[in-house]
Length: 318
Image (cartoon, rainbow, N blue to C red; front, side, top):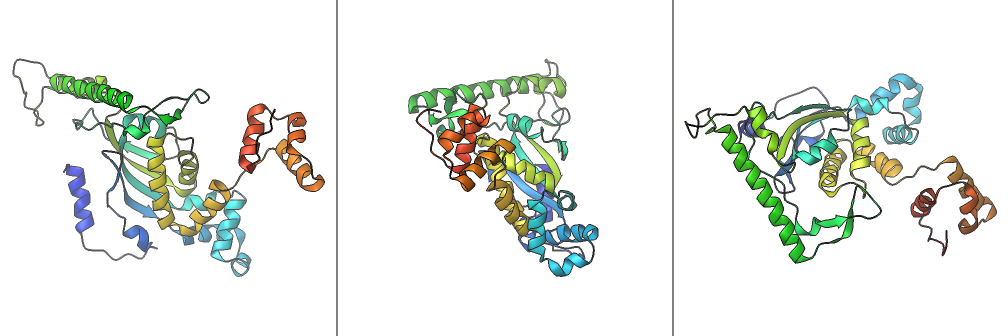
């Protein structure tokens, strides 16, 4: 167990302390506990601030005293989510300790609305832990999505060959890393006759499937935006599993806000001006999507997306 893990385990084993701040019992149960992901990854809650009540409290400051009698907390939160009022959700924050493959970290860090402190391989030696996909997640490149993979997986023989390549490459680069470091872990050389290359240089040949760790602190508004993208079916599987787990944590933390998020963001849909015109024609005039869509000004991809959203079967020719 690492020094950092030992410190967090000590917090987990410590006696509960009294506090006057609002607490969420379901999230208190998750504090400092490891939730494993992939082969070596995990997520754990380190700290949080605020709850559903904090969202309501912040909103009512700006709405005035009259709103309190007219709206339940749930109704107000749903109103805020439906009308895209964001600042009340920024009153809640959560801090997570996350262990993830480097290639997923490079996607994740594009969400520039969080505070991040990452494990430093310039200062510490990385563990020999690298991600290897399960065979059911190995697939060829998609022909119509440049960022995705096909739904069909590789054959058993092909999967075995690919996994062997990935394992061999990761193992070989770590062997080189250890040779360049020439360090028994305490600064003592393994081989007195060889140089000890600086850690910031020794790391540069490691493959992207090696694991890194960071502390990630984010407010609820930006967390929900992260989840809306990273839980999407088109998101990469390896980041989607993190999104799904963090969503479960968020549901425990702010159940009313998460319910509204599911209804208005995850399960809802936004329509463009032209799409709304087509919808009005379908509803008010009994129009046929097959005849309305081609001249609507929507591109082929927009028409397909519109049909998929409303579960309208494709025409014979569109």
